[in-house]
Length: 323
Image 1: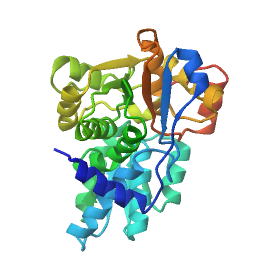
Image 2 (image 1 turned 90 degrees about the vertical axis):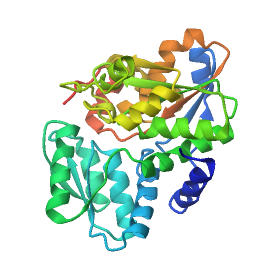
Image 3 (image 1 turned 90 degrees about the horizontal axis):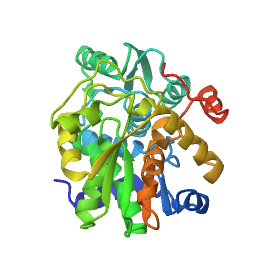
Image 4 (image 1 turned 135 degrees about the vertical axis):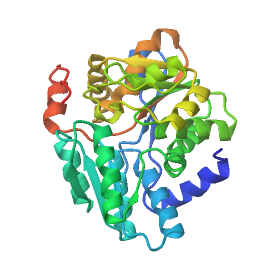
């Protein structure tokens, strides 16, 4: 259980590093979809993505509870790693981040710029995570999981900001990577006693969470082949799955073509750059817009960290192929 006091305490901590991010109702999106569309701009953080909030909360607790900790290790496709590198740098701790081969060149560069030691290993996030656990044991560092209570409390602060500014949302669409973002939205919604529907968004080419929600248990997949790398997870987290199953109205799957189109819509209608996962919520809203006419919906633009050649490919009208 995450209480409103928990989220407000996390919010005070997050404020030491960044201001609240905007939540704008863009008129061109309203014209396009026939309803009020409020975009929560988590692309406007110090790392260009929402996860920095959780990294700050995690690092604060770690330093208080384990003042002798030697360093941290984690695995990522980029945004979680940037958040930990950013927070570790502020705390004066070394951070080792493991990424799969073929990971985003620009996300890798950003993690190094924030001070992380970058290790490339494996075909995908899950194989990188296995190596991260090994490195933690080898060096005596703390392994920082990609889903845990600290991260959910931290990212719940963006939902608190959104619901405080727009408490009358009928529905909010949230992409799923490993689950901290959507669980934070559910926690904030419930803590505030709101009735807003929370809708999970999953990439069709990375369907592990959609399959797991349908089956009522963790279902692993052999591949996660979406170019929306922030959603490319093969093995769902059981704790996150339970919270998502209980707290969401439904799960919407979106194709890579729809995600690419949503990225173009963000650019033309708001002049904001997005990564694939960052545009997935808008792709889901577009899919359901005919049934939402005249309402008010929120979409989480969870991040903007995309390599320039990939973004150029999208803006040219193409859908990138997963690495």
